[in-house]
Image (cartoon, rainbow, N blue to C red):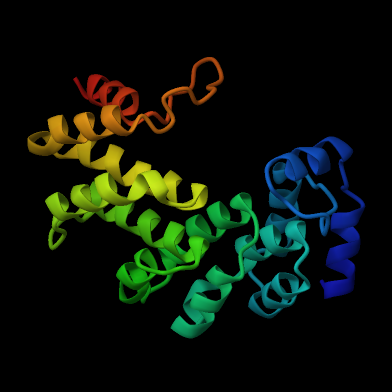
Length: 221
C-alpha cells in the first residue's frame, strides 16, 4: 500500500467516539479516531513495511503513527533514529505502542536505557523507565535495585505524569519480583500515595503500587 492509500483506509475507519476519547486523554486533533482493533486489522493486512512505517510516522497523524508502530522493523532503525522517534511522541497511546512494539525489540535498547531515564524529554524518560521495569522483572542482574528505589522515592512525586506511570511500574515490579525489597517498595508506595485513588474498572488491578504488589504476590501463591 502507498502512503495515500493507507491514510485513506484509516480515514474510512474514523470513529467519533474514539476521536473524542483520544482528545480526552491528551491527543491532538491530527487524528481520525480509529479504534485500536481496527488499526491492528490494517496492520495485519500490511504486515511489515519499514519504509511505509516511516512515512506514516512522519505525517504526525496519531492513527498513522500507531499503525507505523505495528509495521515498522525495529532492527532497521539506527540508535539515533530510535532516539528521535521516541522523543517525537505526542500522546500516551503512541508511547505505549512504541515501547511495546519498537523499543523493547530494538537490539541496542540497553545502550539508551539509562540515558533516557535521565532525559529531560518525558517520552524518552517514560521509555527508559519502561525498559528498566522489564529488566527488573526478567533480567535484574547488573541493576542496583536499592539505588532505583532511592530514585523513585526522591523523583517520582515531581516527575511528569507520563514518566510517573513507568516509574510506578518499576516500583511495583521490584516489590513483586524481589521479596527482600518488597517491604521497602510497599512503604514507598504508601508514603507517596501516587495512584491511590486511581479509578479502576471492575476486574482490573489498581496501579497503586501497594495494591498491585500484594495482588500479584497473592496470585503466585
